[in-house]
Amino acid sequence: MEAEVTYWQEFKKGIIAQNPLLVLMVGLCSALAVSNRFENGIFMGVAASFVLVFSNIIISSIRKWIPGQIRIPIFIVVIASFVTIVDLVMKAYFPPVYERLGVWIPLIVVNCMILARAEGFASKKTVVRSALDGLGIGLGYTLVLLVMGFIREVLGTGKLVVFEKTVFSLGFFNPPLIFIMFPGAFLTFGVIMAVLNRYEAGKKK
Amino acid sequence: MSEPYRYFLIFLGAVLVYNIILIRFIALCPLIGVSTKVETSIGMAMSVLFVMTMATTVSWIAWNYILEPLGVGEFLYIPAFILIIAALVQFVEMVIKKVSTPLYRAMGIYLPLITTNCAVLAAATEAVKPGFLKLNVPYHFGLLEAIIYTVGVALGFGIIIIMFACIRERLETSPVPHSFRGAPIAFMTATLLSLAFMGFANLLGL
Picture 1 (cartoon, rainbow over the protein chains, first blue to last red):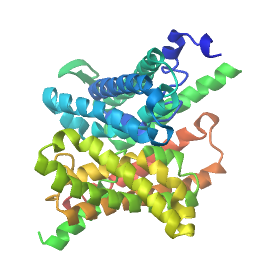
Picture 2: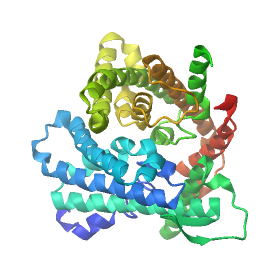
Picture 3: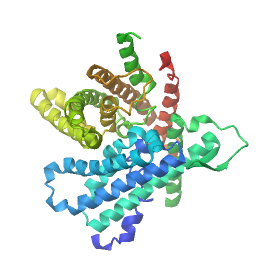
Picture 4: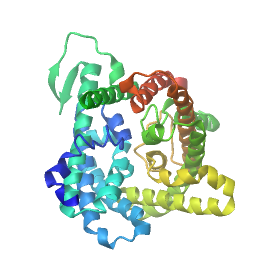
């Protein structure tokens, strides 16, 4: 069974079949909080994927020496080191983004998504597989973030602004602000999940 | 602004105006995952209140007496705080198991979950390390303020999670469209609750 899973499948499953947000339902908090703008999704996605890939690599390469009882603290320390790197890099090079994402950067460390991958995948599989898994899951996370950010920003402000450039602007309607505010996040995510459920149900028939 | 009034505002802000779940989206996993029964929600809320207050207190001591004087706070605060929380949770679990069996039965199973509950780390980081707190009240990062803020955050968490469980128990028996069963309808509920909580914005100038 194990040998039949190709590297490509290892990578691919994170995007749809085991999408961290929509299917596994881990790492929700950060996704809902930062998806009020498309641009935030890019930064948060890259940050989380970076931590995911590198913590997966490290944990998988030391997996044989980790004693079972204290594995969780070890995972957390590894993850925390990479989060610190992201934290300091962002603070130094992207201060406005850092300001907007705020407490969410340190909170990547308790993002259940990353710990779940470390515990459930990286601590059992080889380095290459873990890296691909991290990449796939990170990409799945980023994609949902981007879709949500796109929907919320376009509906909530009537235009899409990426890196201070307006990509397009819908001038014809009065945007309901609610979409970039708090309830909009829950609403958008709930509807996306419902649509996906519907799609899955339709496929089974 | 008198001191007690300022403390009151910090508390009120943490509970209602900047509610940790509905307004700031922290700790959604327990909201969706745990709050299906009122009883479990109450257990979870109590454990969070207990652990969160202790975590902030210990983090405050670590920040002010160890990390900050040594000048390493900026680099080490993430691993330091998360390890404090993890160790604390483990310790609390052992103490409760030894001291009180009923309490352990009520809280025990939630304790391991709390380590990865982002609310605890968030509250500790905001209350202790300058630069993250967004509250429209003067805040000086004293120990008392940090504790008041944390208790407020934990109560805000508890209120919502219990309220949410009550609604979800009713939802179990309601006719919900098929695609919305389970998590999606929970998110719809959260939308409406969050809408209601937005009404607290600007309360007493917060």
